[in-house]
Image (cartoon, rainbow, N blue to C red; front, side):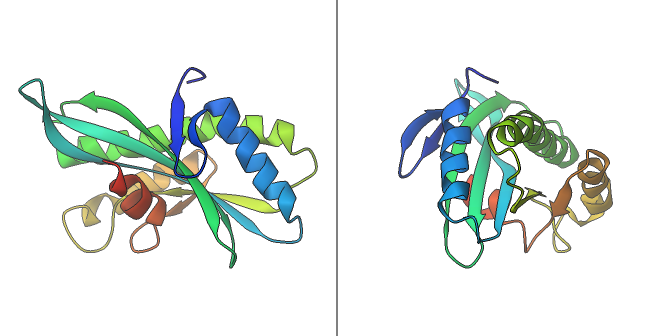
Length: 165
């Protein structure tokens, strides 16, 4: 994932190292504030070369609580999904993979600075077809050591990533 690029509305195209650097700078600007680092993924089905595929987008949001934030997103994989369950599992796995790379690198840069908390935002909720999957995907996230948020609190997936799918 080191050769992967993210987009930022304010900073343009950024490598993963660039994203980590931008997050570190943002966290250091106001060490008195509390922050949420949010990772969420979403997908939408579309036609690509005449075939139906799902376009996956992963978003990274750094939120200075009560004072705004910044976000980065990447357009990722395109693949055929056999079911809604497969799609939701893939979205969740993409967020977990991103966290697994991002968090250790961020911790290296921010030695001693732990004024942030990580949340994985999942595009499932109590209303609609995804309600039966909540326990499963939340357990996936918790089992990986992260805090999980679902709709209506999963803006990283359902708003930011969704905007770019």
